[in-house]
Length: 258
View 1 (cartoon, rainbow, N blue to C red):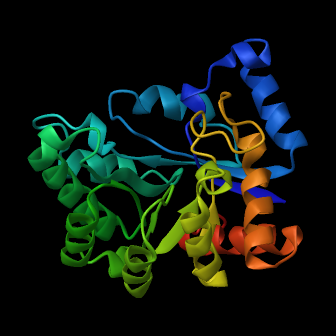
View 2 (view 1 turned 180 degrees about the vertical axis):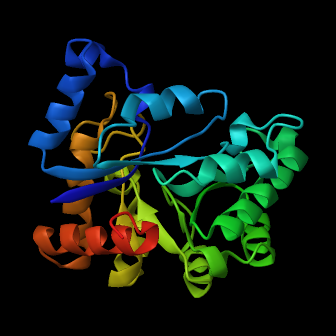
């Protein structure tokens, strides 16, 4: 029923699941989550992440370097293109800019972001964007990097409607995480109400940002339904319709089943 468009399965502490990855997968399945996108944040950790889910048909993967993980000479275009050409890989990223946690690496982040966009266009695969306190530079680089050609998503969106609108005008999608369920997230819920039916996704970003009523606990993809429930209420729609719309949008963006 649901698709979790952004999670980090390799970072979930399996102590909550009897130290058994299969138990985690069973928990996710019982929650009616039928497909996942396991997102890369480090090229050093990418091989282990890929190996973990390589043989699971309903788990897609991305390849990329999170802006908070950028270092000098970390991201090479050819390496990213070679890794991204794998059929298991449906997206490039996550990449982007984070001036909240890592402003001191601004130049490295910008350089890495540009390489990711170039790789995404070369491979014709969408790009997954993390952005925090970097609205102006993010939009500028997306435009310069021709994101409208490869497509992409602003994941775990927490920014303004103005930023969302500019990204939508470039053909991008907007993804909402458990943050949208938080009590103090009324402004974000207003953004979630405005995003067109054909442009929103739902995600957990697990193991982070567990939605209400699990806030403060370790998150996992089985809780993505709480995000869908919040959007159904905000948008005045049925839960089943929100699940179906977000599924259609995921498959359209990531071409996961084509």
